Image: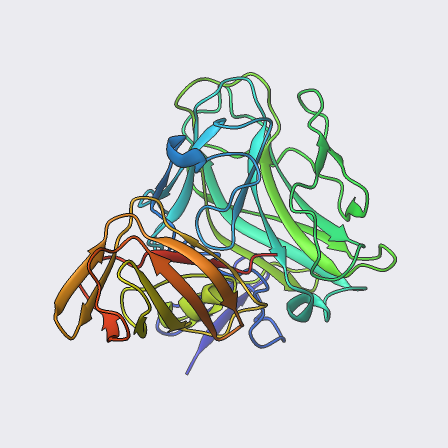
Length: 352
């Protein structure tokens, strides 16, 4: 075996493969979940319908919008990607002249080893045009409040163009965010900081457009987001799809159409228990997904609640017990199971 060592390019092996950077010494190095934007359980397109694109609202799994107002951007899981990737998050300007971005809060258990040392964020990005979206920034933010009790809307004031937004109490920039000069072609960008804010308990990744002169339909695309220990950006760690989905389901999952079992408590209401696909971070909040129905099979046939309503809900980290109203002519005290003909209709959220 032969290899060529080049101080600029890295190590080239005899099969022409190139290792351009040292491997990270840390196993499972990426603290960001869903950095490749592969998982989007809530939807694949987020618009003003049902306020899906409001400020401080979750979109693709683990990422949420931060914007100077609501309906500033539409968000999509797009196939506009760099070579070797499947998805990116597309941020599409809907209200002009407003700052906007995305953020992810990292759970204390997943970042405690990074607090007090150097961390590096890297990601790939491009814009549709640099005439307006000409100042994209990235921040590593420390949260020094109670661990895992993070105020997700970390912006106190967005400020003037080119001025970094003012953060709320207990949120601190660990780096000095600066213009990354993102272009119309995908490239990798990185920032490094030492997490030295006293009493830091969580880390927050924040990437945003810092301009206030935008054009309707401008796009910012982001993918392959990584936050790792150390002062060097290493190649993006792409996890298996099932592993990434399980990671996401610790914080959010949809349930109801696959694993529901229970009893018809009255002619209109079920009493059921539904297990979660993966253990959740904490007892979640469970709500009906807009426009979804609940379909069951019982001893006398099938029944559907077109607009199900939950009540008396008790959720643990592994399952939820609830009443579901909205049916007609059920047979009291008859068992029921889910009928696999409709989409999952309950959203369970344990986001930070």
